[in-house]
Length: 201
Image (cartoon, rainbow, N blue to C red; front, side, top):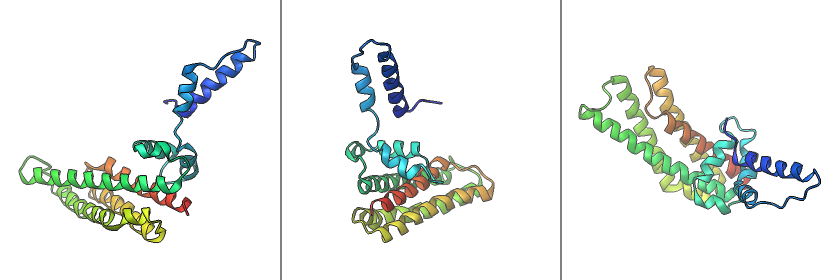
């Protein structure tokens, strides 16, 4: 298991403490300062919303928000973090829709999936993600920014449901899904945005 940045920082500080307890004064090293500064500013936020969530964990929250430069100064601003999560969801849905369209295009050209059930599932997912992209671009992201929590929560939950339905289609048809990772990310990003939005009230 990889040690997280926060754990690495704690380990370094403990090492310095015990080294100093032997009667020798230890000056803080540049390396220790640099490591502690790498602790994500969004860690308290992610611990709050991810610690007890059944949909995503603290690590997912940290990695998602950390992928956007705006999180560096977000700190415990739940509203800013919810905007970031909603924007990440829009980007995810857009790229996933493009991937699905590409798979179907290759299929029509005889170079893609040749399984009828997989093709049927992809067409269903294409419609589902098309709806997510339209909602995100037409009003969902704006609702999050405008703190219209009721409207924003509804469309975010619809996005989570769409990702779930897409993946369920493959499962029920007993065929492998080529978009499992994308569906999982979309679902978790939508749930993350909802959780952050609730804390921003």
